Amino acid sequence: MDCIFCKIIKGEIPSTKIFENENVYAFNDINPKAPVHILVIHKKHTKDINDTNSENAHIFSDLFLAVKDISEKQNIVEQGYRIIINNGKGAGQEVFHTHLHILSNETGLGPLLAKSE
Ligand code: AMP
Image 1 (tube, rainbow, N blue to C red):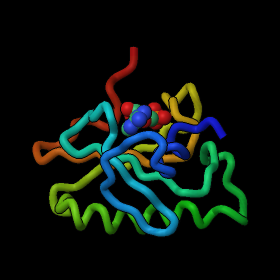
Image 2: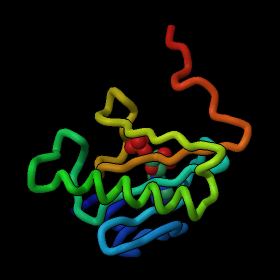
Image 3: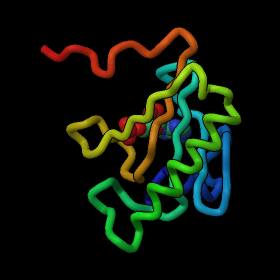
Image 4: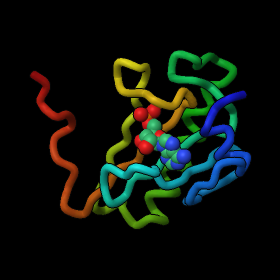
């Protein structure tokens, strides 16, 4: 499958690994939008939230359990962190392998969205 995140999981494309277990892989975003910007992906490929069904819904519990672990290891629980999922082209999704962005900054992240015109 021609998916860059599947290639990252397989080690065919390099990445800075932050976390890995049998289900989940997490790595630094190549174009960070905050001092902490980590992408969390499942080893099972789905393209977005709308690919979820009763068989693969565990993907999200696996991802969020990994977020909990990562946030503790990265020491960002106290300062807080934001989870973003861009779902679909119109929402800014560029890579069609379901992923969570973890963003954190000790001086804060600002408003949820930039004001649109
Ligand atoms: P999204 O726009 O939600 O699909 O997010 C895709 C993210 O993947 C962007 O923030 C990119 O900077 C990031 N990205 C794309 N290619 C790579 C890569 N090879 N290594 C790390 N991050 C990447």
